[in-house]
Length: 400
Ligand code: FAD
Image (cartoon, rainbow, N blue to C red; front, side, top):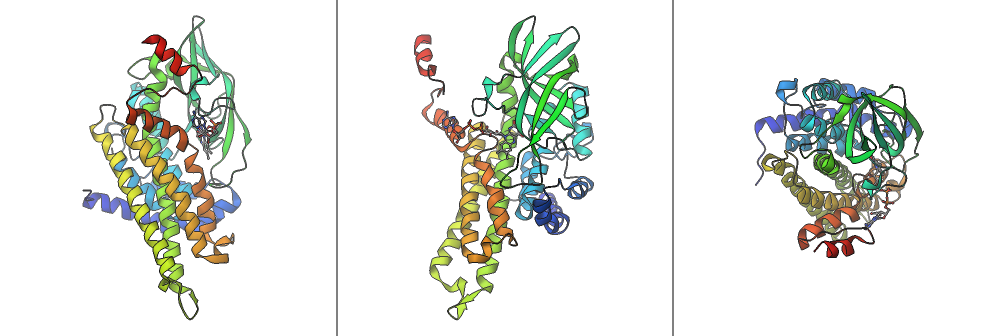
């Protein structure tokens, strides 16, 4: 059973205040203007909600991932974009660097997020989406520098994020050593922000190409997970489990926000001489929405809390995958039902639920699709490897 402490309730209340004021009031305008909401970021930074997960020795409050989910849900209930900014200001790229970085690397990442930066994590490429390990971006060692070449796309925060964690194939002495993560900063020569993608939802954060055109980085920009570069991708993806829980929580928050709008609307709106809330068919829709939201929250809390007992310090991969699949699909359904309950009014761009439905749609795709996460869950459930390449099962047989 989860019982929130007084400190956690205070944290939730602090996030709710920003959600009800700066972030919430601006949400429709953020969507319309497609501008990164710098004023919301300033409010989040002043309130200490960026870099919450930074440990005390690096100047942060050392909050747990569980604490971070409490904040994300409140913000996303009013503004999905703000929720996502808090995810990346505490999880994902920064989590990997804080876990595996050298003292200097950790200090730099801490300084960035505590100062309000939402780091960008650069994995996906045009020809390597779900098959992420097929990425072709290379980091080639030339003397005392790494030279990066390649192209990523769908990078959240392209052009606004200062710190980047770039996944690339490490080539040393002409040999492929594994996939490593490299820290780079906006404005460095050779780090080029490409075209912006026009998106369905979450329009306040740019999704762009990020191109590496002979990007030269000092040797100390490479992040090496404990298992070494050979298993670098697996180590870096371990850290990504926190981001998955964060993404699931944004979906949860958006769904809750839409549900609350629907509850309020059907109590106000009258047809056939009585409030819509008196029609049993609609009551059951509300009941199903409430049940699904609650189930998603419990799965998310369990996944977030699992980080406390994992040796990696990150959420359990299976629990994180289950939570993200469930919460993301739940959010699509709940926001869609919330729109339905509003009738034509819900279909108007003047109504919050229209934005919420669009914002919710992305979470079955970004950060590991619902299908790829089901592959992960199936592998654990069946206790067998589930290779996705055509020859994958055959080569396993050969190994046996
Ligand atoms: P594909 O891999 O081409 O998949 C297409 C479809 O086929 C999907 O439905 C997929 O589930 C399915 N599919 C593919 N392979 C299998 C399989 N083996 N089994 C079953 N189904 C399969 N990436 C980053 O690196 N950094 C970011 O910051 C980032 N932000 C994003 C933000 C948004 C809003 C979005 C939409 C994406 C973002 N991404 C980011 C990219 C995201 O991680 C990829 O879109 C995702 O991994 C899927 O890759 P793809 O789009 O190339 O789809």
